[in-house]
Amino acid sequence: MPTNAGAHRIAVLVTDGLFDFELAVPTEVFGIDRSDIVAPWYDFRLCATGPPRPRTHAGLIVDTPYGLDDLVDADTVVVPACDRAFGIAPSPDVLDALREAHRRGARIASICTGAYLLAAAGLLDGRPATTHWMNAVDFAHRYPEVRLDPDVLYVDDGDVLTSAGTSAGIDLCLHIVRRDFGAAVANTIARRMVIPAHREGGQSQYVELPLPPPRADTGLAPLLDWAVAHLDEPLTVADLARRVHQSPRTFARRFRDATGTTPLHWLLQQRVRLAQQLLESTDEPVERIAERTGFGTAANLRVHFARVTSVSPKTYRHVFSRRGQGVDSSDV
DNA sequence: CTTAGACGCCGCCAGA
DNA sequence: TCTCTGGCGGCGTCTA
Picture 1 (tube, rainbow, N blue to C red):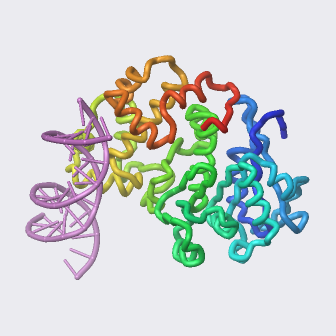
Picture 2 (picture 1 turned 90 degrees about the vertical axis):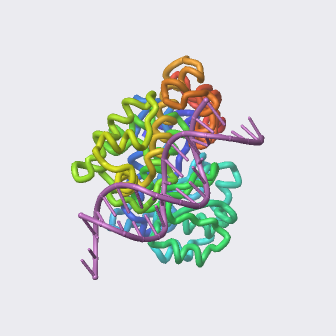
Picture 3 (picture 1 turned 30 degrees about the vertical axis):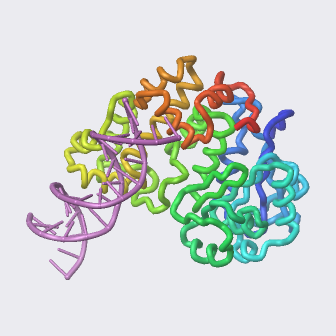
């Protein structure tokens, strides 16, 4: 594993009884050397708590030289879902390590029921967060101080991020890559993993057709492809409905069933994504990018851009322009 | 930042 | 009876 000097250090907490897929998600996104896309890539470490060689839920033995001390030193700590008993009553050592890492400025991210550990460490008090919907009632009962939203894929609260069940963990990890390296890098990785590039955190966990996206039964995929190719045009819901020969009311229902969001909200997300790519790859003024993305005016673009990315187009361009260059993630 | 008018969302309900 | 459709109206959001 390459450990480039100055690389952003990502530590994954490995506990006994850890669920294999949860471990695989951050390993796949962060742990594979992707320095051909952007360098330096992450410095990735599996950090084990006792016993020395934890055993995953399926029985794989994790043999890693890193422990909780390395976790405390990381820039980002990922906490995957773990054995239920451990999640409810985690060891003080682990909680101390999480608190210390956070106190030192690390970004803490959980997948699925990993949120239990964050909550137990007090990192979620008074903050918005999510976890797997099946655990929502139990979680809310145990941690009433947490502002739990059980119906979103992930929550980005800046230095603390939480995500819902397994596949939402992929969305969160890609979101982190997007924050650190920009949309183009995140999209490239999504393509290599052969998964949909971008699902927004606020998107519902209750998607009728989760992955892959809608096929012939709803017939929405060609329409979505068409819309993405025509984002610069004024698109109304009535227009889109007409294209698939449905009434606006039925179209809205099918759209929500298939994507978990509404047509307008989806359009705004796509337009922001396009704006991100144009800001990264061109020198065009914001006003011009607003035209090309269908926002019309720069003021309008700024409103939606900031809502999605939490930064202004100018800041985004400053951080991410000239793809492939190193990025100071503390600037985001 | 405020504002007016347009547009979009969704519960409701009748009809297929 | 059950499920799906699509029109209506109120209210929230978007745009200029």
